[in-house]
Length: 372
Image (cartoon, rainbow, N blue to C red; front, side, top):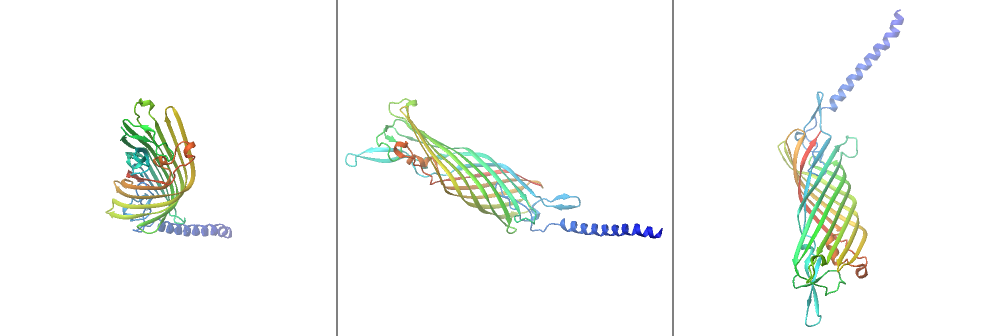
């Protein structure tokens, strides 16, 4: 009987001791894994850009998990981008012919150019999210952002009464229209951007990023020239278009430039990248019930630079309000206004179009941020 007791119970006692020892080791590991975070490690994100996942832990809420605490791993921002279009290049939209008594018997000059177009302000959705990864990963976080601005309009007008005016393409006839009234031009522009970045914590103040970005910019520019003796529906009209789809990579950083107390943080986020641009341009005009058209396409290298300054003010443990200012510059793109000097009927200009233009957008960013 005693032999049976020892043979049966001793293994059970040994197993119980082993389980108790293992449990104490696991408890010790958990205690270490949920120990208070270092004072110089936390998560933060600039307004509508990528997330900075380092800073002061005093600036972010800690989420209770039983008797322990851990830092947030999700950082989500939703709001709006409110942008305007900067001054455009001086490409001629409408030109005047001046008659001279001596050779050369006429000269050409610009009466309206792209730099005369003044843009309004327009807004669109701006949304971003950041996921903190485990320390074993090669990157510390993944961030995505999407924003669009539609409804941007640029307008210009010029009085052409008494002028001999016409389109600006090189082979256009120099003597074309006798103007009588105001020539009005309007441009509509849409801007889209999506990016996905990997983020690495360089220090408590700086995060580095590298990622993929797509930028789309499409616009049309149309104008009507009033002529002497014509009714409004007889006046010639011109429409130029530019479309761009940029795919490529970017590098950047997120730099904490100001920290005030536990509520306010200010960041600067510069980014730049090279892109393959699928650029298109088109032209169409209607004059005396006769329509002419042309279009062009080109794949080429483009550049985009983006700088934003963002401020976040915390209202609760999980919610903050954010405001910021963003500058976006695109180079190596097809701009609608630039087509007026090169695009005309295929019989006169062939398939020529201009894809060497640039565009500059800037404006405000507003929204709310949630962490959990």
